[in-house]
Length: 259
Image (cartoon, rainbow, N blue to C red; front, top):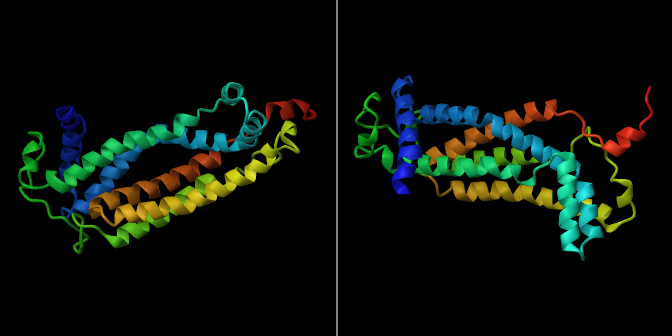
């Protein structure tokens, strides 16, 4: 398994990083990491676009989800069946949001290994024949920030952007029908929507704190990667969310009078 990981992920990422380092003016490893992050983001763009769309669609049907959970809280089997029917009818996949994270995790680990051991003289022996060997990698970013050591500045910056990113995706969709479905009116499920909103708010504050704490212990190069990836995600979310059309309840759409 280790050799497969090295061949499929670690070695290609190491070679791409060193190749970028060789062609970047001034041979700045930080700029090379930023370019590598942009490359990864472009490759993953279709998948993360789908993730954003699914997250927003899941938000739009949250009142219905809570109504089903409340109404069938004593019948888990029927609850699961109705939820599956709801997801199918609304074309929502609750697990879609996990895929980009699961794919990024091995890339994150490979980049960690590239920064911690791959950029030394022994690690450079893993370069492909067509990638020039620089013999030595300067770990300084912009001439003053050592990316092999933890950076509190980058960690805090990554946490702030993470907060921005989370608040952006959790912002209620303005084009979505605001009222819960009629079957939810007067039920506990309608009240549970506020509970879900409160949990989302807690997540908006918890995730940045986790990002900062982890960033304090990781090499600055990894934190830089996470910071740039988060900034690119904020930009992508802004573009994708702007293009998502209103999601109207089909039953309400049928009742809407034609003009």
